[in-house]
Length: 357
Image 1: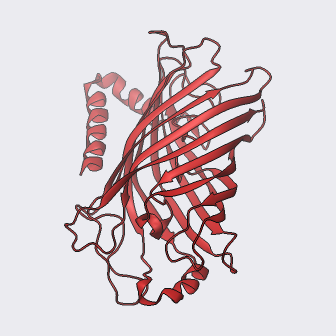
Image 2 (image 1 turned 135 degrees about the vertical axis):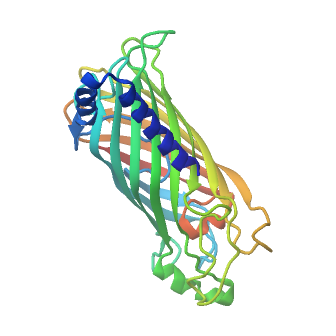
Image 3 (image 1 turned 90 degrees about the vertical axis):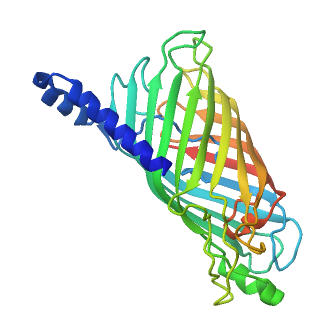
C-alpha cells in the first residue's frame, strides 16, 4: 500500500544517513537528531486552508441556508447551524533554525513535527421540522506528520516562502445521523435506510506557499493531495450492513480515493500594529457520490466536483491568542454530511466565523 511504502522509504533514508556518517560522530549526530526542538508548542507548518472541509479547527456558520436533504420531514430549503469544533494538537517536533513559537521555519531551514488532529462537526436544521433535528454529527481523530522547508530568496520570492508536506498515516472518521431525524423519517416507511458511514483513511498532501513581496503583506498558499480509505482494496467508505432496518444491506462502495486541490490568499495588515485584512480561500475535491442502491459493487459510482469558497476579513491582533476570521461561505457539490453523501448538487451558503489559536 502506498502509505506503508512511504513510511518504509522515509525510514530507509534516515537509516542510510546515519550509516553513512563516520562512527566518531554517529552517536552525537543520532542524539542531535532524536533530541526534540520543541514539545507541545504551536508551529505554523502546513496550517489548514480556511476552506478545507472537516479541518480540525473552530468554525461556526450561522445563519446559513442549505438544500433539502433526502427523507426530510418537510422538504425544501433549510436554515441551518453548521459547526466545527477541533484542533491540531502539536505534540513534538524537530526543527533547525526555527523562529519563535507560532512562526514557520526560517530561510533554508527544515522543520518536522507530529500532531494529533481531533475534530467534531455538526449540522442542525433550525427552520422546517418541529424537533430542530440534528442532520449529522462527524467525529475525526488520527495522527498527522507535517514538514516544512523555508525557501531561499530566489526567483523573485522572499525569505517568507515555504514548501511543505502533510502526511496522515492513519485516521478515523465516524458519522452519525441524528436520532430526531431518524424518528421523523419513519413516515417514509421501508424506503428510508440508515447507513453507517464509518471508515479509516490515510492522506498525503503538498503545499507551496510563495510570497512575492518583501514586506510579507500578501500571503499565498497552494495545496494538493489525496485522501484514501486505509485498509480495504476495492472497498470504499461505508459498511454493507444497515443500522436500520435491522438485517438490511446496501451495495458497497468501490471507489476509495478522493483527490483535492486548494488555494488561499490573504493580504495581512500592518505587521507591527495588526488590524483587518481580506482573504479568499478555495477548496475543490473530486468527491464520490455514494450509491447505496447500485445493481452491484462493480457498478461505477458517480463523482462530482465539489467546491467550497470562503471570502472575508481576518483580524490580526499582535499578542492575542485568538485570530478571528469573518467570512461568507458558498459550497456546491456532494453533500458532505455523513449518510447524505449520496446527494449530489447540494448547496450551502451563509455567514461564518473561524477562530484560530
